Length: 378
Image (cartoon, rainbow, N blue to C red; front, side):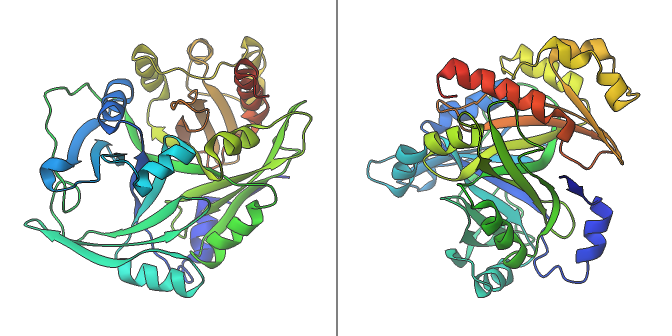
């Protein structure tokens, strides 16, 4: 059964106990086989703008990274330059995917000390990095699978991204598509592991449970999963955590765990102020989305009530709609964007709603099952 609290309630409950203040998502780093081509893809298909580069020309000898940005979203795309590196081993095991979810904090040393004191496994001990533009302090902890959180303290830095990076200014600059910020990031974990990581975010990082879904909420005739959403004190960071549930066939979480070879980030939800315009542009640039049957729209307005958008446009683009007590939201999901059927993106526009589209789960997961059937993995 869904249990939902408004964002204001979460803020009020945790205002006096938020021992780990987080200002927002600083960046998301993906390990990929070819960072230069991945950067080109995110520029061309998703409208990201070139920001920074690090590699041989900046003194790195084992990897290169391209940083792309769109409004408040920063992606770092990193590839190895030599064989036998830990980065290369990560790619061999998991394929292209998210390695680092970096969190913007005021005090990276305190964030590390507080989380490790509470039981987090250290990933990066606090270290200062500097150049002519100032200095940053970085630290980090391990989370589920090989995913890590890096704490970034950057108030004393005026450079393009981080020390060690230089501005990347290619001539090729396709226009953006209206993506604004990271709304949430979904992690898939193994059987019976969801509550372990819910407790991790609660005990280690001071997050609160915002909403939960069981296998009655998230199921079809064939597959099921369970999910709980954890949110930090100010509500700027939201991490739904999924685990498999028993079903007649292999669920999307099981497929992910098989191909990613362990827990990891399943999808990144990015917000827009005009989902119709954004999705039109994305489709024109070649981004492919999950398809929902036309029957989904037959009783949509009777289910969600009045909305500002034209139903015909939503139907044409395949955009889903759901409502909660705060308002409604519109959302759509890409097909997997990597060679393995793992990472994908969600495009979301919130018009008051604070929830996650519970009313769309059946249509969405049936669409995913159709993709799984085509891949022969259902």
